[in-house]
Length: 145
Image (cartoon, rainbow, N blue to C red):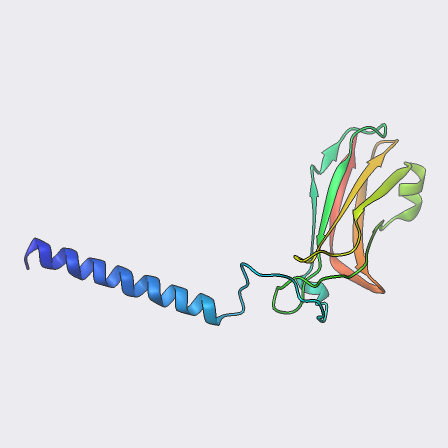
């Protein structure tokens, strides 16, 4: 086989592979872009809770940002849902004077809600988000030192 023929054959296989992958992504339930659904059924198991950083200084000056993504069963964000964020152990958070500040408690066009928290005293705190009466199963643990 000539060098030119092998090159064209390889290029052809590559292009066929790219077209195949793009076709499957566009037909699947994967959503990389687009706005959140204005109505939608929340699928708690698909929702996600993130914290950054997960360790911070106690004393009330430093904050940890917690982001909650409220998603439907296709992985698309759900717009306009009120999200609550709380400690699983409410007494522990009350003792440490953990303060929750809502940056954006209603989900935006990506299904995202944002909170900041600080603590006067040291401790490890497990946080859980909920939408209405539906708790989100995934939790996140943050530490103040």
